Image 1: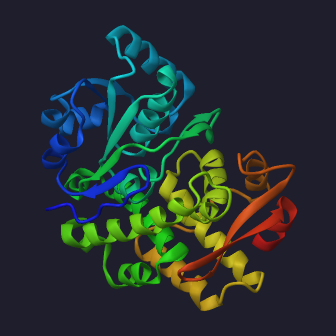
Image 2 (image 1 turned 45 degrees about the horizontal axis):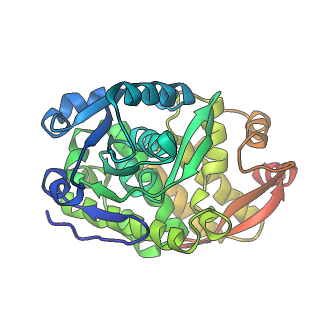
Length: 338
C-alpha cells in the first residue's frame, strides 16, 4: 500500500507500510526507538534495526516514574541533542516517546509508527503528549509535534478485538465531531469487515485523521476549536478513573452516549441523531450503561485537568458531524445527565 495521506502541520502523516516508509523519513544520524514488549515480540525485525528502549504496557506505565526511567536509560546510552527518538507502538508508547523527546535535554526530534487503531485515528496525531498522575489522565504534558507519523494498517491485524474496538470509538467520535460521511460509512459496515478489509481501514483512518488535523491546524494548543476533539472525553476520563476495568475507547463510548443524551435534554441535538450514535456504538460491541453512579463520576470530573473553579467546557453534539463547546458548571452538567 502506498502512502495516500500527507497532512502538513509541523509534522507529516503517512498511511502505508512502515518498513517501506521509514528509510525515507528518518534523518541521517543516530536513531533510538522507544517501544514495548508486545511490539518487540511481534515486530522484532522492524524494531531490531534500531537501538531501543522498552517500556511496560497499559495505562499504569504512562507516568512520570516511567519517564524518569527512560531519561536515565538515555543518559546511560549517551543520547544527545542530535539523537532522533522513534516511538513504535500504540498511544501509550507514542505519548511517552513524545513527552520524553519534548523534555529530555529541552527537546529532541521525534517521529512515530502508530501500531493500534486508537493511536492511528487519534492518540499519535496532533502533538499532544502527556502522562498520568495518580490515575488522572494526562495531567502533565506538552504540545510538541513529531516530524512524522506513520499509520500502518497492516499492523492492526495482530490487535485483540477489544483493543481494535477501542479505536473504533475514536473513529466514531471523529465522525460526530466533523465528518458525517465518515459516520455514515461506519454505519454501513460491520465490525468483522473492518477487522479484515485493509483498504476500508485506510479509508476510515484517513478520514478520521483529516478531521483531527483540520482542527489542530486551526487551534494547535486547544484554546478554542480543538476542544471539540474532547467529545465524550470529560466523562470518559472520569469513567476510566472510577472504573479501571474499562479501557479508554470503552469509556469514551459511554461518555459519548451520555453526553449525546444530555444534548437532547438541553434541546441541542435531535433525538434521532443521539439514537444513531448509540446504535452505532452498540453495533460495534460497546456496552453503554455507565459503570458507576453519577455522583462518583462528577467528583472525578471536578479533578479533570479541563475543570477550572468547578466550571467545565463541555463538548455537546448538535448534529452528526457538528459539535459546540458550552461552558457549564459541574452541577449543570450533572442535571443534564440525570
